[in-house]
Length: 202
Picture: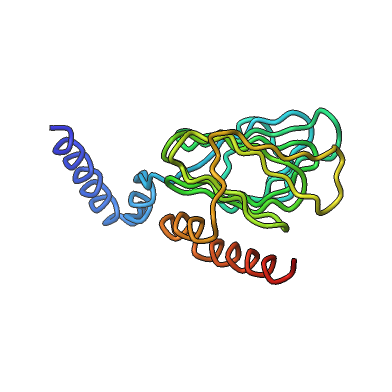
């Protein structure tokens, strides 16, 4: 019944637009553009304390975060950012953290340029965060709390990396399987290459 009512309303809107367009003062295109889209795109919501940027622009509480966004937290004590990804989990960025965040259904990933982040993900959500030193990952079989840090770049706070017991250390083959299954072939290749390089240069 709801589907039929929606179709009837849509048909009525098009009929009205077509009638009005005959008088030259209304456009059918404007009605089509006004119809809402339902694309189920995964988005995040930002909570900030202090100075935080999204794509080099100042961010405020409630800012919508899309995949491939560059998030930066100013290098001063007390600054921090938390990105709520709904059912995917959340990401917390410490002062001085800079990262390009990527996410899709069942996967939180991205490139950590400087600083430290902590990723919380429920069962069924995989994690793969690239740093200049390599890739930190969790396979999603258990709920994960994954702390990721890089020693590269300017650091405004001491960086220490810890891992929860629920985070699994993965071989290059297992990591590749995770990322290929979630559409991350490029990251998987980079992880495999970095591990090969480390094994040939002790």
